[in-house]
Image (cartoon, rainbow, N blue to C red; front, side, top):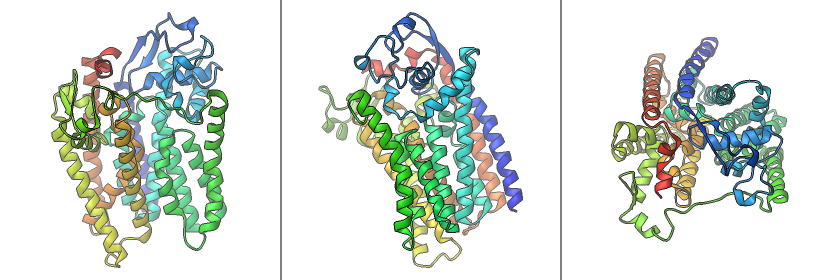
Length: 461
């Protein structure tokens, strides 16, 4: 069975790559002039960028590193000279951009479109790494290969996972490092090879200097690795690898920009014309979008967009976003309650067929989801409208958590063992919906092909 499941995983990842190719080609490229972002000597030129979420800014960061100009400035007012790049994504740590810049420079003789698509392919391959380690994590802890296949498929064919891995972003690399760190930590605990905790900590530290949202998995990493017998030794081995990369990055920021962490906020929900009371009460009307945002609607929005690129599907297809999101959040609550029921019964010894390790991993996933949603709701109050309309791309950091809890529900329904037939049905349905979602995204960009059209919400504010 082990050999067969590994072969099936290779097939699953091959399908992911095939569908992923559709995702990375669904979002078009466009020539844009950026006088405020680029060095003055390049400001009058038209440059090619992808139209994915913040993809232009991620690419500018890569170009700055590749050109030998280091981390770009977060805003024009922080420029020391007119030849520096400017990107509001400069708030992010540099590891992904340094890796991507190596690929960018290696393709120096290629056309801009080939270079952009190559970085998208890099992100797609990071997704394959995340999928493989999610399979390994569940196989280790749920003690069955079929559950691992289901978990990997839930991650691979969730539309927002495909959408985000089909564009240039630092999230895919961070997620790959997190899943690798979790797997190494779990395997180290099982084999009692404590020296490998150093590797788990280093992988997680690298995830943090790729994207700080990886931090939502820190409690989960501690949960799945620490035990009473070796807690002190494990912590001493984990912490240096986690902390040192982040501290070094913060020190560089302090020396070059005068602050350890870079973050600039807009406040459209809490500015002079809106109040927190309005948001919690009657809601705030978004100009040009025909939508009233209130606290309950935003919560539903987060629940819906965590899996589906509704910010695209609604505007293209006229889908009632609140209805879709309401259904999604109800399903999410059902999944949550089933998992909590499993945890409760397992703790009382009522589910002997459910491994104790799977309960710990399940709880780690639930905790990551809670932290992701909590951080996102807080961020929505202090960010721009584009964040509100594309919340799913922030929740994708907890994609493994979602896959774990869905797998747990299927496991419970099938009385602690997921059979091949049930797994095949679930995986086929996921692939079909993922392919359908690619079509909606492709159609959206076909109808609204310009950068201005896509970003009109921010301008309306």
